[in-house]
Image (cartoon, rainbow, N blue to C red; front, side, top):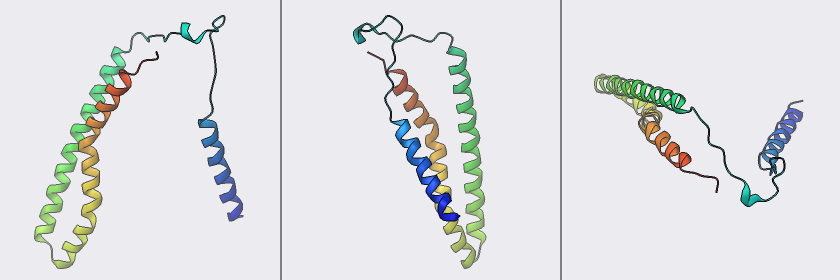
Length: 123
């Protein structure tokens, strides 16, 4: 039974990967020349962009504050701990450093992606 569920899982993953890479060809009625196709601009996205920027800013600030507080707590525990406790804190430090780096870089990564994707045009 366990082997069958693994086989089904693998088949589902393969089907998803195949369907994600499939090409879709569509045209507006009456248009057959690809040179005449133009992209449509979406109106009224300023409110969503502003809201998204505010949410990202708030999450970045909260994450930064939380990261600094956790760093202070871990630092104090490390300084006051025994040799065994220091070894434990060293083990937990690497996941913390990776998480803190992601929190600090999240707004920069989001900004880079936004600028890159907003400059992409369908020519």
